[in-house]
Image (cartoon, rainbow over all chains, first blue to last red; front, side):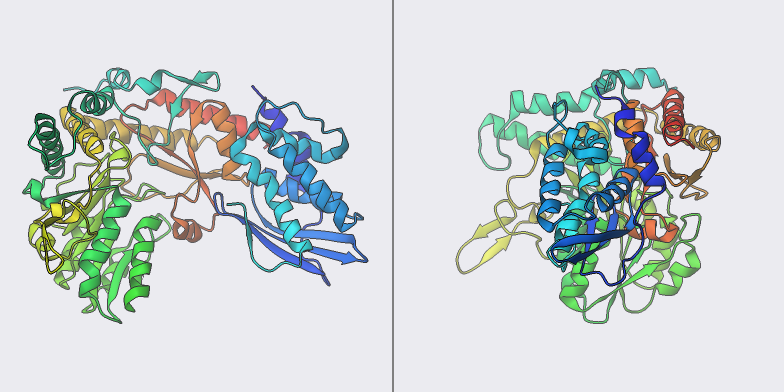
Amino acid sequence: MSDLSDLYQEVILDHSRKPRNKGALENASGRAEGSNPLCGDELTLWVAVEDGVVREARFEGHGCAISTASASMMTEAVRGMTIAEARALFERFHSSLLSGPGSEIDVSDLGKLASLTGVREYPMRVKCASLAWHTLNAALDGGGETVTTE
Amino acid sequence: MSFDVSRIRAEFPILAREVRGVPLVYLDNAASSQKPRAVIDAVSHYYEHSNANIHRAVHALSEEATGLYEGARTKVADLLGAASAQEVVFVRGTTEAINLVAQAFVRPRIAEGDEILVSHLEHHSNIVPWQMLCEQTGAVLRVAPIDDRGEIPLEGYAKLLGPRTRLVALGHVSNALGTIVPVQEMVRLAHDHGAPVLLDGAQAVPHLRVDVQDLDCDFYAFSGHKVYGPTGIGALWGRAELLDEMEPYQGGGEMILSVSFDKTVYNKVPYKFEAGTPNIAGAVGLGAAADWLRAHDFGALMRHEDDLLDYATQRAAEVPGLRVIGTARRKTGVLSFVLGDIHAHDVGTIVDREGVAVRTGHHCAQPVMDHFGVPATTRASFAAYNTRQDVDQLIAALHKVLEIFGE
């Protein structure tokens, strides 16, 4: 049985109360919308990519503590990464979210993002943590249609 | 007959289980209620003793199954105060009933520019079928406004009735807020304009005494699983003369008298609307649920649920930052609320870990959420078996939420 404090760690609460990189990004090279119809979370994500490197990522929207913290930490984590690195991090992070309740996983390489992997104990909440990342993927592809978690 | 909640609880086997290591507190009854032993047994007994297709064969089991299915129809008719069991059509649930009325009753009688009137309180299932119908026919959907209590002011509603109103479709009780809508008066006003009225009773039948003849409505729909019955079964009641003149809804077996490639003759009501082998076991279970409701003192049950709502509303006021959404003067046992800036899904996850099941989200009523300017609420909804202790556990769990979020 996981403890609630594993899900709502201080770092997550901090990012949900004071999200980093919140607000529109001027001169973005990519923009995408994400929504989770199940809970009504909506998110707009902007990226500025130069020479294949993510110079900046910002977001706007509303959602639960998990989705806001995930968006906030993600925009910090991908800054300075190449597109390939950002996508690899997405895959790495996403697979840890989907590893299922009770699974033992190595999150030592995920840094602050590791705090979010406690969500794997709460299958109904995994999409809260993954919404921002799916939206990032779409923004890196150039945006277009709204991404949904359904 | 007095109301003994511990005896009621003993009839619901699921209430004895634990969830996440703590006794279950089930407060998501507006989504689906739990089932008493009588309903579970009726369904099992049907499958163990009487299972066969109905209205077909001459063998004993078919005769028994037909008797049980038609007996259930009579029980549902009695529950709704219908004049005749032939006015009760079995459907999958309220959603199917509304779609049936939209397509089989309204569609052939509506022209471009005609109007359907609903309210701002409706569940999506009493919005979307009408939007689809409007797209198909060029009709216009009108929406009666709500106020900040979550009530539908009658003046605003009355103003939208007119010579082009072809149907009024209203929820009897709001699923998101618990508002009891003054449908009797609204039916009278609609009839003054010659407009027939469909009532969505999904949230009303479990909590109010419903009498379709007193209400004087034209159609009434409800779902089995919210009235202590099985999922996948519900009923549409309609006035006999309206059902008679309606087109069939779906084509298939059971709904016909004779079929040839030149001409097919439809069966009479209600069978005309029940194409294919129906949910026989579900109907049997729904009949048992109707019996169960009628065997209890409904007045005492309503007083019990009113007491829970009053108690919950009073205790909720002690929770810092809690704002109740929906403060209608007449409500069923629904407490919908927001807790400070904390998202409903975070609230839901934390109280779930404390063993308390509530619903979080937009409750399939996004226009209601938009009216109150919130993306989602947490909703606790009560049934006959809930207790003041359940409310206490909810309140304690909400304090836990505040503790985790440091507010």
